[in-house]
Length: 496
Image 1 (cartoon, rainbow, N blue to C red):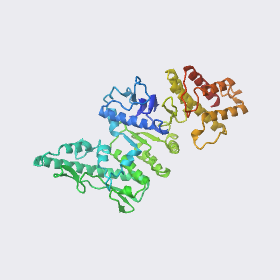
Image 2 (cartoon, rainbow, N blue to C red):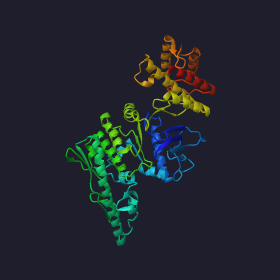
Image 3 (tube, one colour):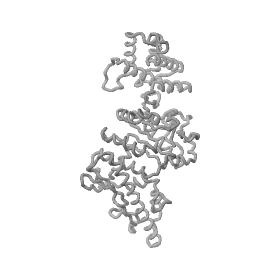
Image 4 (tube, rainbow, N blue to C red):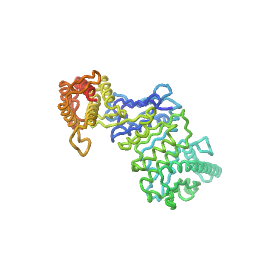
């Protein structure tokens, strides 16, 4: 089972309603996004939606710029033929076995999560993974020694079973038996986890690094009335990293570089997902948001092999990045040879004081979708949003024509220094020197642009089409937006 459409309105970085179509088959998605473009908001929308299906809470994190009387929601439509599931500020998500399965089986991973796998608490000399595993990674895993309870709930039961009075010998004996069942089951799971971890980590080709979990032993300390390990005063799960035949005893952050630490962290997360028996009929998504910041390009490539080998068959994949080069590599591997199962999207940030609005489009369809979205916003009387998408279409049309004709433009160290007014000047100069083009419909030579269209674009530049980097708000009127959209449609038709 898969998600075929996501619609987000007035949630975090998403101002107004934004539908993201993943087709009836529920395609996988690769998403490029500038900082502040809404990419991470999409990550959180999916994560919090599935979490709310379990916790039954109402939507929070309303967009800062949304009008008080404008509603906020997240909708997911699955490819099971049912109605969209809606989560709002006033309604919890309806009971759904499909969404509960999605909550259980899905994986959400961002860079800060990787840091948690090798974070050293103050005054500690070794990495303790107990809380991360019990309360996050193994939170839905049942204890094989007591399949009626997950490890998280089992641990909470143990904490509640600590007697207030140490003279209650029967309660202490029952507690000790419960603790034994907990850590014995935990060791069973860690043995499975280590097997999967070793397999996944091997794809990173760090042959000198070996990963093993130390056996866990817990006991009840009567003097402190707490649960401790055999070597420390608190519970421990230690990943014993061996590097070049030297055991680091949980102190690997002091000896390994960031690339190796990131690879270990990613492998731990992926390995825990492999403990869950997902079937093709379950809703299971894997969402990765810039988890590879600490890896250079050569160390990123194994992620492709890992996804192909372990996740592509049973998970709907969402890969998000701000790195355009990595985005193109992912598209070349996944999207271009298999467009029936993959889509690629580009997210941008509207650098506009009038409105905070993410601008996004399917890769390769930018100009068409920008114009279509501008018309939709205009029809719904949202002229500011229509203007933002009209500007985006304008900029995309000019850049495409510049690339097609290899137009000379001024050089800037930063790409955003090349504003649309400079591009428009270059396009107009080219049109003056090359007046005529073969019309695709009639086969006759006609002018690239009629003079009235050039005048209409010039007029719109002073009102609606001023560059996305403009620094002053401009009052936008209905007729000006309509004229700008019409001029852009003509411009696109003649220059494409």
